[in-house]
Each structure stands twice: as structure tokens, then as C-alpha cells.
Image (tube, rainbow, N blue to C red; front, side, top):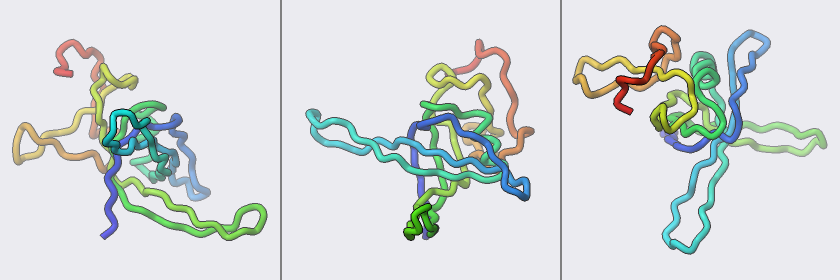
Length: 148
């Protein structure tokens, strides 16, 4: 089983690119804080490379910016390549399947808040974002009535 769930802050604005076949892709890294037990210890973070494809890439580039907290569900992928000096290298990255907002509009810096549709199970549960279709979300012009 290859499942990864991470929560961290984007280290840079994600940038949307396209393959020669016009498939959207973005790659970026997030800083994930390590757990520490002693109050005298300095906090440490791991910087993890993430890649997202198609609608997920579009969604990330549209709604997330540097410094924002993001939750990512995906899988670890490895690939081998040769660097410019001819040395064999191996890269490890997380391929994002689902992404989630983890902070409110007041805490974050994004300009519009996508809202998830309730599932038939309960009015309090929401479907996780997975398809990345713009029609899945609405832009809220005023945040006066929002609970966050």
C-alpha cells in the first residue's frame, strides 16, 4: 500500500506548466514540521517535493500561494535519471491525488474560498476535493456571513 498524507506550507508559489501533449502539471515543495518533544529544541522541517497533474494541478495553482498551509493525499513515486555530469540519480516525490484547504480565509491569503458540496450522508460532512473542476466551487464575494 502506497498512501501518503502530508500537511505543510508551500515554499513558493506553484507554477502551472504543460507537457508537450498539453497536460497541466505543477511541481513544488512543502515544508512539513517535524514533531519535537523538548521545549528547548529548535523546530525542524522536512522539505518534500510534490507533483500534481491535470485538474489537481490547475486547482493548486489557482487557489494556493507561497506560505499557505495545504493538506495533500497521494503516493510516493521514485524515478531515476542522469544529471548533467552523467551521474545516476534517484528522485523521490509525492504525486498528489487530493488536496485540501487547512486554514480559514482569515488565516490564509487566498482571494476566493471554494466550498465543497455536502454528501448525502450528512449535512455536516463534505466530499474531499478530487476532480478539480471549476464548477465544483463557487467564489464568495463577501465573507460577512462566513463562519470562519
